[in-house]
Amino acid sequence: MTRVEARRDITLPADQPDRVFGSLLTALQHMRNTLREQSSKRRPDYRNILLLDDQEEHARTLSHLLFQAGYRPLVMTNALEAFTRFLQVPFVPFAIILSHDDASNGLFLQRLMQQMQQRYEWDIPIIRLSFQEPSPQGQTLSSQTTEPLNFRVPDSSPAQALSVPQTHQPQSVPPPAAQRQPNPSSSLVPVSPMPPGSRNISNFFIPEPDTTTPKEARKISLDGQNIGRYHILSPLGDSASSNVYRTYDRLREQDVALKAVRTNVQPYHIMEQQPIEEYNMFQRETELLRGLDHPHIAPVWNCGKSYISGVSFIYKTTLLCSDGSLAQWRFQNGQNRPFHPREVAHVVAQLANALQYLHDRNIIFQNFKMTNLLLGGPAQNMSQLHLLLTDIAVQQDGSFLPEVPEALPYIAPERWNGQVYPASDQYGLAVIIYELLTGKLPFKGNSKHVMRLLHTGMQPQTPSTYNPALTPAINDVLLYALAKKPEDRFSSVTQFAHAFLRCCQ
Image (tube, rainbow, N blue to C red; front, side, top):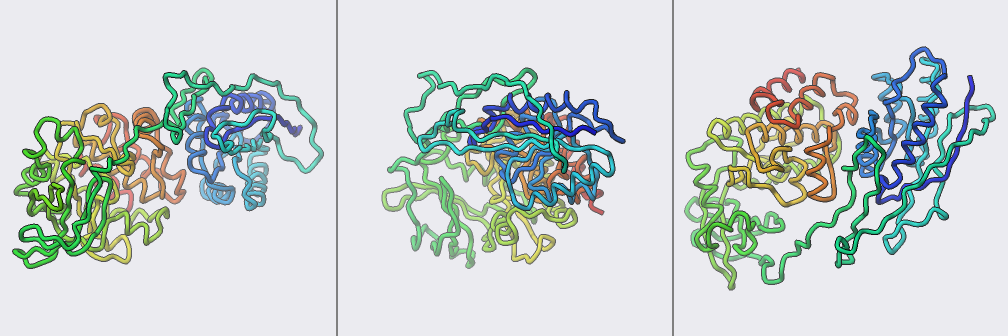
């Protein structure tokens, strides 16, 4: 059997790997043409690509671009992970794209290729990518200073040289003057033309508007202050627009959580219809939740407005969850490690029950993020967690769209277009489950615009791609709940939970 080695010079800028994607496609097509006649027991599907990359942004960008070009990329962090997956669930990729030089890759990469050769008589071509860091000025270096991209079919015998036809390399095109940003800290990357059949909707860098809080709108601390019946004891946490405090309620004679938001930093879309002094979003939340009683929904006990040190703010009081949120618990128990489906099933049963309770009363939660899942007590493992939903969106007409980056991965496709349904909560819950089972989010981008494109136009990776222990049934249930159209998901969040729980038995 003829084995060949080919080499060509090409660059993938570290901050914009999509810029030379056309050349990568050319290399893959050349391999297909060269190796089409290679005999094997089981000819691989030329659409299957194994991508080894420990840099999540690179991997996500390249895998999305490959997918749009008609390939089916399987993403693994390193060769050990790929080799372990192959022993559990054999797969035959047409080629391997290796985008980092982890020293541990060599041994297990060799073992993986030996297994492929022994079982299927298939010698896998390898494409080695070299990422070039941008210059200090943020500009891509010229082609004269590039590192090579090498692709070869490995062989212990001397290799025969094979010439590769040179193709036009996409060049960096400066953006029009009207599109240039005056802020030097922002960087707008022009998107190069893509080959036919592909779309560039990956993690390119798009500058966000300057959302720096004006000096006059910055928060102040309420430590030690008294607000009527409430004595504020100590801070529990904060965000861009709010502070949460441990507070003693003299009437209840117990500690509660008090969340305070300055009125001049409330989201504009909430306040635009009414004067600030006449509107309290916490009052609307209290009215929305009046009469509700569920063990996995944090109650809103009281709300009001106050004025301290020349600053006006609104506040609400709720159950004190001193053990924090699911985000904090994950950080303390392995931030990105995958959890066993039976552990996650305990969480799913609680959250789905709470969401269905809301849906039966025509309320949609909408506000998914790990910090909005509070712990009702201490827990040594996930099976002991008692979770509570908090901060239910007060806008139930589809106008609510969170601005904070940590909420963007959970927003269903239809919500980006101003529509919201109970199935939108099913999508958000499915993202939570996906993240707990795999340690990764289905979509991750560096701007709101990119996240919208990914949610509305890109299919997520199969969960078992990141956690080979997951069964095909779990894959199917999660991907069904992550369907782009609400009508293509389960008929209710309860049905979704039951389907998932059956897979975990």
